[in-house]
Length: 298
Image (cartoon, rainbow, N blue to C red):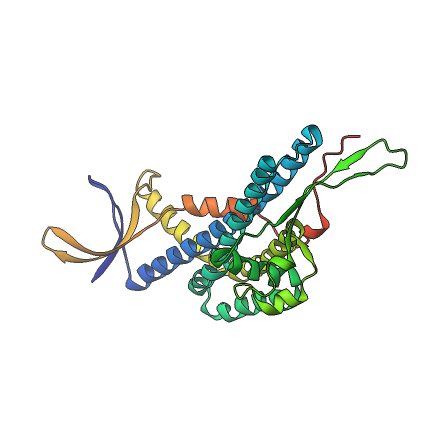
């Protein structure tokens, strides 16, 4: 079997012979970058769904401040909106937690047990983590998450010059306790009602901490994988007038005038550039419970 770098396109293009070891290194590097991209893409799903929940909370608060609507139809619409956001959020976190290990294993097989341990530590430490995990199982198999919506308002200045409006959404204990679809040990430690936006912030903060742990522990192998592919791209561009579109590493068996291609590894970094953008966009947010957005303008 032989190996080379070549442009995967019709026409005549230069080629570079490479060794089996070089081909295998390029193959593994490409797999690492794909896995790293998958890790960031699934984290982006989690963050985007969390932001949708937060944005809807602000939109509902603004609407209530102006209209003060409280008929059953509008209450249903609000509850339905938040149920949809919670289901989307819990589905994306389940996807992230269940699938992240396979991607981590590609980057660093020895890291998978450590990542599992990080998730376990968050579960053992944080009630909101345990609660949201149990709630996810409940909404997938039994019922909806949002049982109560309230719009508390309070004066936040001594002279009553500024009135603050909020929206709070709750899961009520009475709707869950005794239901086999909801984990009994979590139901026992629940208060009468759990506010879901604050719980979501704490839950996402915990996931963010694990994600930061993963990032820091795969950073070296991801960078070295990118560097290897980039150096081969640059090497090929040097003999092809600066062009590398369609560049691949291929394994093949020579068969007369035609090559019998066994395996092909595309070599490009456009998707990895997106991964870097996602990494910069979605930093560590480990203390969301200490933050909130205000519409205060005075």
